[in-house]
Image 1 (cartoon, rainbow, N blue to C red):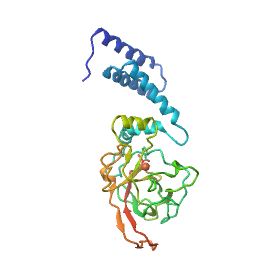
Image 2 (spheres, protein in one colour):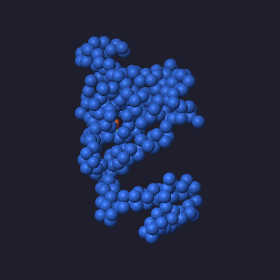
Image 3 (tube, rainbow, N blue to C red):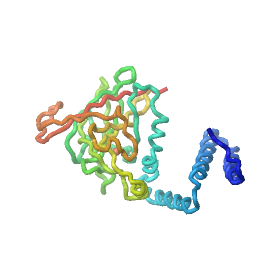
Image 4 (cartoon, rainbow, N blue to C red):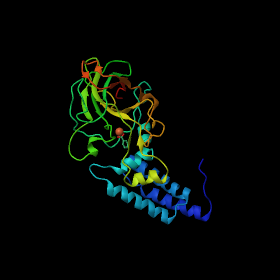
Length: 293
Ligand code: BEZ
Ligand code: FE
């Protein structure tokens, strides 16, 4: 329930909000007008709610300025800010598949790249990324269980130092690639066992986490982006069961349905015939795509 503040200052503050909202009346794009009017109302309500001081307003402007200054082609501090405030996961939720049979989505993150290498079915995306080998298998189906052949599956992950290739100096591609599901919807590839890692915390977003006593860690995960004609694109991860950070993900991305067991295997022969003289791991993840509406 909204209450109207009938004091003189309350009326003056409301008049400012009303005036700004009215200023958007001539916006030709209906959706743009709706978004700007609502943004104005909520932003003003926030300032009035906390009785924002001039010093706090200046500190906020200074913070956003630092977020802008550290952002470049390789670092997106605004998305990181959205992530740690949970806004990214709100947007994921608002736009989630309507069909509960579909695989749940989660945050995209800043480390996807468009031109990752293609690997064949059963290929290895590690390409020098360090860590325990991990054999990843699954199927891609639609919500009626019909196999989706030829789906494009992009995968990317950090190495066991907790770094993505794009966080290292140089142009080496490692820990990422894409493949297509087979005629039966099946997919399989080698990667490395996912490791927990901190989101970049050497900038203003890290300062915010420190000031609020929050940690930067994300639980171990492997990213997926799955596209197939006639289906909604899925952006998700799998998380490793038992990871100590599952309940404190810095970006609130964990969903129970995405937590999977990682099987530990001694040295030996893997299901694809690969001979390993070190321990290896395996994980299975079936992907269900919602049909495009
Ligand atoms: C990631 O999982 O890659 C990620 C997501 C949000 C912020 C930083 C990293
Ligand atoms: Fe990640």
